[in-house]
Amino acid sequence: MKYCKRCLQTDTRPGTKFDAEGICPACRYHETLTDVDWEERRNEIDEIVAFGKKHNQSGYDCIIGVSGGKDSTRQAFFVKDVLKMKPLLVCLSYPPEQVTQRGVDNVSNMIRHGFDCITVNPAPQVWRKLMRKGFFEFTNWCKSTELALFSSVPRLAIAYQIPLIWWGENSALQLGDLNVMGKSGSDGNNLRNMNTLGGGDITWLINDEIKKNQLLQYSYPSIKEMDDANLKITFLGYFWKDWSLIENGNFSALRGLDIRNEPPQDIGDPLGITSLDEDWVTFNQMIKYLKFGFGRVSDYVNEDIRNGRMTRDEAITLLKKYDGHCSPKYIKSFCNYIGITVEEFWKHVNKSVNKELFELTSEGSWKPKFEVGVGL
Image (cartoon, rainbow, N blue to C red; front, side, top):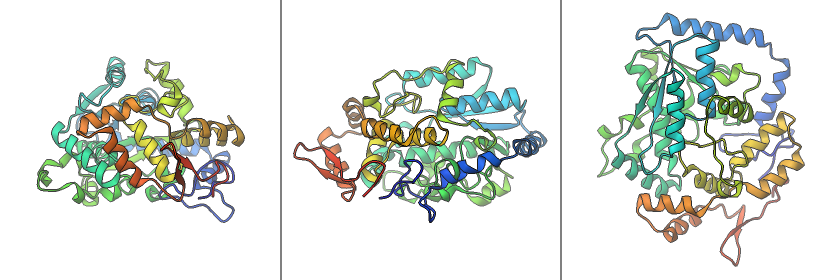
C-alpha cells in the first residue's frame, strides 16, 4: 500500500494507478486546472445545452438524478438558473426502513423550489433480498442498490425520450477511478464501468427467488439501447472551477439543505454533508476502510489538500481520528433489516478485512498495520 506523494490517496483504490513519480490521477488532473480555458469549456457546455433543447420531445430538456443531497441540489439550480433549461429530476427512493426523514425533507425542499421530480420505488422485498445477497457475497450491501441508483436515470431518460442526462463529478478525474474515463472529461457514457457497477452485470442478482423480469430497475441500459436513444451523459463537475464537497455543501445548505449533526466519530464524516438520505452507507464506508485502507474522510481531505485548504499533515491527523468510524446503532439497524444478528454481521465482515493492511488486537478490534501518509 502506497500513498500519493501529494495527497492521501492510496494505490488500493480500485481502478486507480499512480504515475512514475508516485502522484495519483486526481492530483494530476487538479494540476491541469490552472491552465484550463474556462470560456472554452463554457462554449462546450453551450453546445450540450443546445443538444438537449433540440431533442426536447417531452417538455423537458434534460434529466438530473437527485438524492436531495448537496451535489444534486447544486446541479439542479445550475441547470435551471444558469443554463436556463427545464430539467426533470429523478429520485430513487429507499424503503421506509432505510430512508431518513432528512432525506425526505431534502427532496421536498427541491420540489418547493419549483422542480418537477419523479420518484422511482423498486419493489421493497426484492430490494431487501438483494441487499442481503450483496452483503454476504461481496460484503457490500450497496452492490445492488448502486445498480438501481445509476440505472434508474438512463432507464427513465430512454422511456421519456430525454436524451441528455447531467451527472455530477467525473470519478475518473476527481477521484481516480480510471475505468469511467470516456472520450473527454465531460463524457459520462462510460459510467457503467465504474467499480461498483461492474459494467452493468446483473447475472449475480438472479437466483431461484429473484428472476430477471424483476430486475428492470437494476439493469443498466446496454450500449445499443443508449446508442439507439442517442443518450448523452455529461459530467457537470467538469465545467465548474469550484466543484467540491465544501462548495456544493455551502451552496445547498443556503438553499434549505438539511445536513447531519451527529458527532464525526459516529459517522466517519467531520462535516456531516454526505449520505444525508440514509444511514447505512456510513458503515459501508467503514467496511471499505477495512478492505482498502481508506474511507469517506480520505475523499474529503484529499480535495482540501489539492485546493490548499489543508496541509497533508493536518489531513493525516483527521484520517487517524475519523476515517472508518461508525456508530454501532447503524450496524444494528441494518442487521435488523436483513434479519441477522450483530455477531453474524461481524463474523462475515471479519472474513473480508484486508489482513495485509490490518491486524486483530486482543480486544477484538482491527488495527492498521500501515502508517497513515506513509503506507506499508
